[in-house]
Image (cartoon, rainbow, N blue to C red; front, side):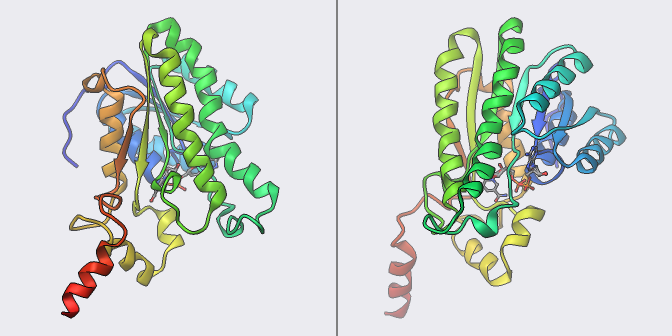
Length: 271
Ligand SMILES: NC(=O)c1ccc[n+]([C@@H]2O[C@H](COP(=O)([O-])OP(=O)(O)OC[C@H]3O[C@@H](n4cnc5c(N)ncnc54)[C@H](O)[C@@H]3O)[C@@H](O)[C@H]2O)c1
């Protein structure tokens, strides 16, 4: 992928959920842009593999195994980032609990433990990493935080109520953080991907379902992890210095049209 080198030179970035998918693509792009990257994930081997790829490519990275829903581990993660690289300028939250997808089906049936498992990683993970990163960013006079939401945060998938709630919560949390700390130079924005083909999502949708998703994208192809990483780079870089509390949708136009459009098009084709 082409990129403009050096937009994060001198910065330390902490990326959660960086063992694979969008988090790994973001960690790798940020390193190519000059950042020192802490590659964090509960998947220790996956985090190490991402960090190895970055270093093989000439970048600077350190892996760290941490569960973002565990406050003690998050405190240790942030301390590691600051001690390893001398500060923390950029925080990227992509950790997501996919383990509960099969049980996160309907409001009446989903056990409370499903809600707790989803919210504690996807929403409270953002809360905890921000809580421990903020003192360092405030001390440095600024910082950029990006949290991952999803179209599912405001457009119903018809299932996954806990996931939808977590991702909607990410928006409210991020806007509040942006408002509370903006005057002190801290920006907090949200990336809301539509369907992005990652190993995790490719497992969730079969060929026919993927075709349906493609039919609803106003773009010649499906989304890739790098599409989100490039948007994240913009939000982390000085180019977006006056953008705070924003939700940047990266969905190839999936949410751009009124829901009745496909049916109207079908009717028009039949006439
Ligand atoms: N891929 C998509 O289509 C899509 C769409 C909308 C939103 N998103 C969001 O973007 C983010 C990245 O998506 P992805 O497709 O790359 O997902 P993914 O499942 O590949 O990545 C999530 C990562 O989080 C890690 N993780 C899980 N629990 C954790 C924990 N407790 N502590 C630390 N790490 C943990 C996993 O090991 C995994 O590496 C997620 O927040 C996801 O909800 C993705």
